[in-house]
Length: 175
Ligand code: AMP
Image (cartoon, rainbow, N blue to C red; front, side):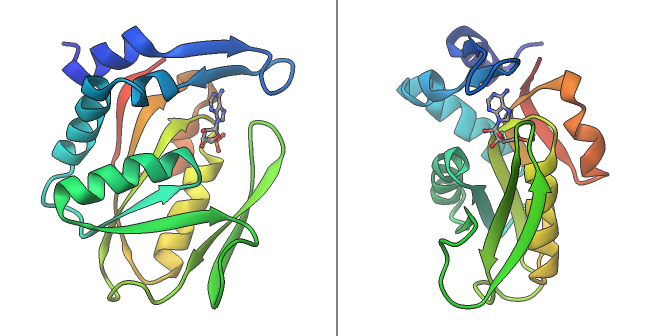
């Protein structure tokens, strides 16, 4: 059965061939975020799926921030920002990883939560899984427990799920 959130995503998702480079079919979720009922549906879906199982939610720059802020507010949970390299001050942990297009580096400030805090990781799209796998390593290296992973859209042909082990992945729509 299609969930209310999945129906909204399927109705509003936009796709752009050859963006940001030839061969990439870019999936744009901004129309979902721009519709208040759809945005509420995706936040309620992810927050509801993991209800009671997380103390904090980590959003991955940049679209993951939108999800993490709303889920954190909805669940009365703390919010962590996992940022691209070179943007965070102080003591940070870093992970390098490969993207569907190019390579990247993600960072997390240390000492923001109590050791053992349960952290839910969220992002808009799961493609090859490199971004979320790197974020999961940051969460665990920081001394937290990975409570689960929530994404709006999973691109199944890129097999990102296989890189995430048994981390408890919840996706609203899989293509
Ligand atoms: P990956 O590490 O390959 O799973 O890539 C995930 C990140 O890159 C997510 O933050 C997505 O926003 C973005 N991304 C990768 N591929 C796509 C795509 N085909 N359409 C939209 N976003 C993508």
